[in-house]
Length: 430
Image (cartoon, rainbow, N blue to C red; front, side):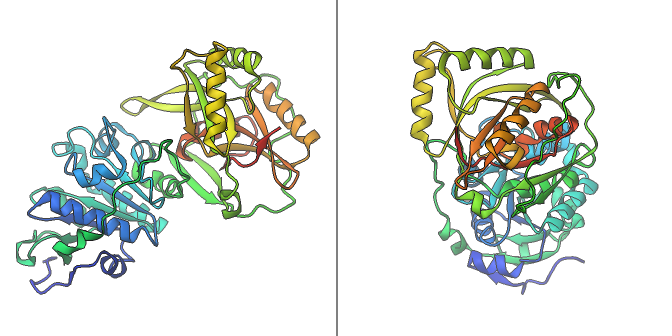
């Protein structure tokens, strides 16, 4: 019998729950009133995210308290993750005002999706959270058969009701009370989303466990590169360029080195303009050349991303982008210029917050940066350089909202002989 007696521990404060279960990789939150349980789950997840990375999953469907944290309009969710082979990176949504917390929406048909009953996949997922030092919080109906599946996979129950009424096929960790939800803060909605979020590191870490062999990714944090690491990109030219629209088979495991130091965080230039997304590399390159001739805007690049297009399938899109501004006003002015010059329509283009890019060279001189850019241009990549405050130059490719979004381009760079390093975009165009 996994169930604890009616005298199990009870907590009214979210911080007490987070401290009591700090070593656990996963908890289930359920109760007679599912909406109330969801409210308590949000409070517990917020408290735990003060000290560790936390994912809050909705196994009920369209829970208001969870939805309010990070939206979810027509969002892919856990149902698609288990049914169609999407990764956690595809569905995770950052919480704008709490960067260590992200939401896993329910997805379509979450209550009746049979693939969610896989104990093996839940075990891999929960183990992945444990190995990454994270916490998975799942809200679930009290009558769901998944409660037993999740208990067998390693999750512990937090019950929002009397202990005597709790399900008896899962370990009861504690009961949580009505006053616990009083600390919930309303979500903050910035005008331009995309505050830099350390949660992506966790999302990337757990892909291998969650996907069960779909794609394996290991995130390795390089907090402070040594001064000797001057040029990351190779200097030899390839006989033929890299056609990013061509199909190729990526390796089963790709090591992504995430360059995300605290020093860099203070100097991010995240704002960019997304001009258009093309479905081929040749179309994107043509559009990029036209935009450069018309405006001469800084940091022109093409971001190659994979967008889900069906079960276990994705389509590559090539986003034509400009700019690396620390202030959104610079992006506003550039977007207005693109519209005045007729590069895009009066309502075309969009300002995005894209704090990440694939790093091609670091700590380079101006001359060296130009040489590195020549190398990568010959390979079919659209590199750009940003001058750093210390007088050196970094060379980047692409601009991305998340580390996960940069995965496709990091794989391309690696296939072309470079290093798969995703870094903060710091510095200013020159």
